Length: 261
Length: 212
Image 1: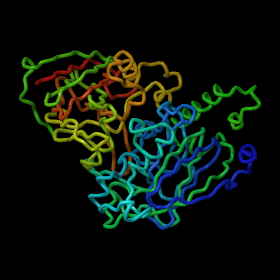
Image 2: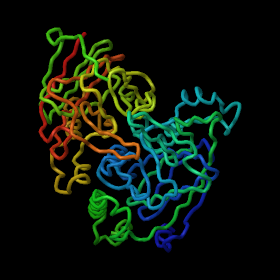
Image 3: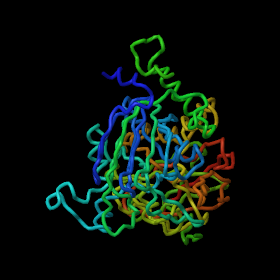
Image 4: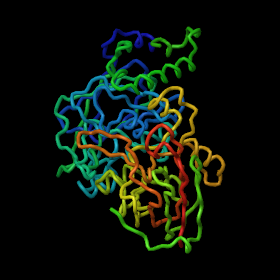
């Protein structure tokens, strides 16, 4: 079954689903597959973290991702790095142009202060869930906890700075139908939630669902846009290649992970 | 914001020199003041803080940036934990601006940033790994190594979304001073990086001073 999926033609949608607003989920993505996230009605926020399922101590590192590519924001072409110098995934397509990764999560206190409390008891799944608790729940499923919660991505959300370094949240950064595609360059545990961005000034709790697709990717060509977006990214891809070569020597025909190296 | 301290070195209860490429780890008690002094100028001090009573609570760059609405740290900045509590407050600062976006150098990220053959050059994360291994009494491991403050480091962010490591704005004798609001484990790597101007390509010692 798994092999059949891995051999699907590039562009084949392997799976498609929807994540309700104010919710959380996790997916193990295979190397060579794309996670496409689609903002259904505009104004979505997706908090996201990555871990290496073979070694959960290897995780998404926002500072390394930013400094390696000399950028404060993330967009098409950028690679999302682990703390071990490897590329979890590349942003292969993006209709938005600015995603942020420095503002962290909404918390119980932030949500209560901004939008008031809506408990499960009173509102069931229409409660005002927060990003921090969402991550804690999802992380705990893999034996992870507070200590493992690094700076997360806030996909679909834009925060810039002025000359003095003051943060500016951009409202309606993402429109209905906007999407971002993450092509995974190694097997990755993806933890994510759809809770609002902590700096969103909306008067009502923003309740925004997303749709997502898992799509079979084409092989990464040497002239690949993301691989060549920055000279650093070529070296990141080289680190992945070394990792996969070491993890599954090419004389091991049973190993799936060598299929794209 | 430049703000000088009234404390004098002769009244400090502890003074410790930290050589370039070495680390500092110790508990600073609630109510004490800690100063990190850039002795020769243009140095970077990569620093992490943990609640000494519960190390799952630690300095959070994201919470600190978001709650003050600004990416730079200086006098008046409250250093906030992942639990939303103020751990320390910067009370004096003669440098004017410190970074918490750039993270620490690691051998692995050095391969990406500079060249694959730079993999065995000494890096901040290696100093931290040695620190937590030599001091098991604190119960810290790689899991606990999170996003740090780079005291004295200059990482300007532009409106357009650029981010660069620039030549430092610190100089000989500049310092930053913090008051602790809880018993805090302080873990510092005195940055050994030789590949960028964060410490002027010339790593030099720092001094850590503590007052009651």
